[in-house]
Length: 200
Image (tube, rainbow, N blue to C red; front, side, top):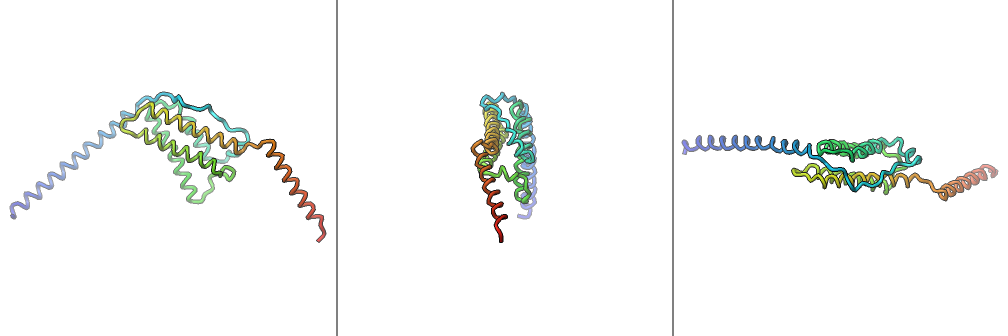
């Protein structure tokens, strides 16, 4: 029995080292596959909506919203991307934007203007984040499909156009709304003036 114990220890040591060497040799192969996929050519998305630019009022409303500016720059640069490697880098940037936004909100730092803190705008932001994550998942597959990724780039771009449309609607003041605001301001000013003239 004493002679068998050293033999078993040596045998278990050999098996352990050979298994760890096998795991180490497999890791670079995965990286090689990812690097090879980075040169995958992506066709231009065919499902893009027309570009929706912000109106003057909407631009004024979001001028101090740095998150929107960064998101706008990132999403506007998506359609001309033609390789999977460039897309992956851009998606990392978009993901970092949302992580920073969530972190700032947790720290109670005001990063989103009060004027755009509506359910409709928030829904559009969530839709963009969801489309970005779906696209990122497709881009990280071992065997990515270029046409599928291209379609998802279009969906992300279209979700961003929906955000622009929502911001335009949010800041668009129709003539009827403008008249209603003026009427309310006049009524408020008249009541304040009446209160001042009333003797105490």
